[in-house]
Length: 117
Image (cartoon, rainbow, N blue to C red; front, side, top):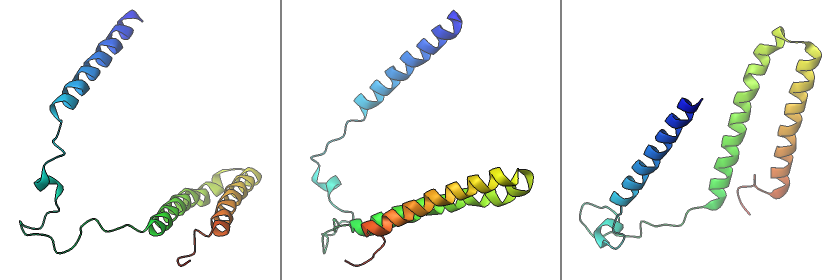
């Protein structure tokens, strides 16, 4: 037990030392004008490269990813159906679908699914 504790301590100290050395050596200059400018083959940019990003599009993309993962979680439920008790399978599946429908209803009520305002 003492041997495992000492090895864990040595590994922890070594990791901290390596992270400190890496953070000290990787300091970058944020005041360099050329590094902060957008890259366009040495030419002056024609327009701003820092255009505003649509937050509504980002929220819809996040909602899509969440529901995509939930569908991926639903696919194995069909395969498990023939190996499990039907009542337990049905109650678990309905509970999971109920939670998904509550989430969808909440997003719909908040207006997050509408593309235009």
